[in-house]
Length: 159
Image 1 (cartoon, rainbow, N blue to C red):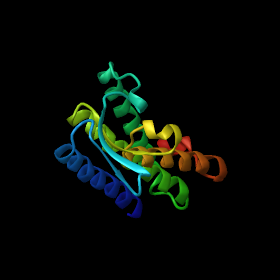
Image 2: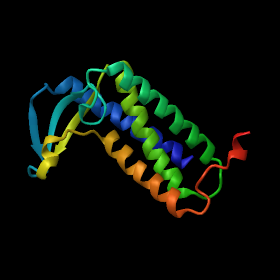
Image 3: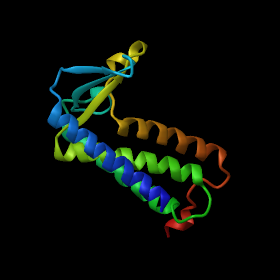
Image 4: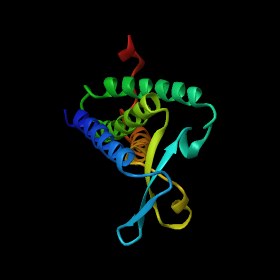
């Protein structure tokens, strides 16, 4: 139940924040917070990561939906098993972030990104919380799959 709550929390928090940004911020405006370490700014990502394939929105949407389905399937297979807490936590983050961004792609036609970190080259990259959940979740799933003895899905479980 905890892992489902994590997914729901990410989706709901992102939904609220993105709607706030959409309603209260203008494209191009920016606001520095946390003593200038973070900048809030509204940006529309019409492609994949870093606007990759922004001119091929339908392909990006289709690929995103396929990956979301695969993550959801893996989550459903891993969740009822005992142990694998790191894998379950990573998949929860990954699934919550993926749902949030895929929802945007389907309903808005773009993903709402809204903050950048003012450090080196990162100041030119605009993120949202879902992006961080996806990055951290992917890393945790990778670590769990390497270091956990029974982190893989047995093909006998699928039949």
